[in-house]
Length: 121
Length: 108
Image (tube, rainbow over all chains, first blue to last red; front, side, top):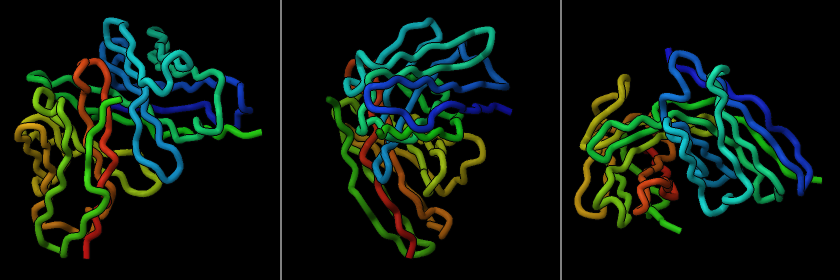
């Protein structure tokens, strides 16, 4: 069974930083595209970052320069680091495995349970 | 930034058929994937590519694409299908993805 278990999050002060973890089981993080998605309260899903199996990373414009996606291969874990947070970063964050099926088709087939980040003083 | 456009809400009578659409330029090149999200839950992967479904997704869910528009059709909607549905696709750079704004499906 493929599984992603998230940890981290909680209350963060404006201007502070946070790190979220996403531990995988049943598959290898470094062999897959891994994605972070966030959802502000009452809002829709927002794609924020991807790390390819080759290590290349890409970010949404809304977080570029403040967010770092990374992985620890021996721990089989994905990470998200977000710096200089503002109340607008308050959201549920989800990690996901994105599988490329070929022919310009892909999809996120395994999702973490989500972890809430609240930015407030 | 790149956008995918979805209607905010749609309703369907129990057992009837509903189609949800998603419009964006990159859909001419990349297929959309679709996700179902119930309140308080993580998204569930529903369809991808040219009408493909992940294992475990009922065959009443089907996907299609034409030009710059992708569609998710629920044939014979069930009460359990009441949820928000999101499309997702790469943008024209091919290295970033975008979600549509979501369509809330109400089963009457």
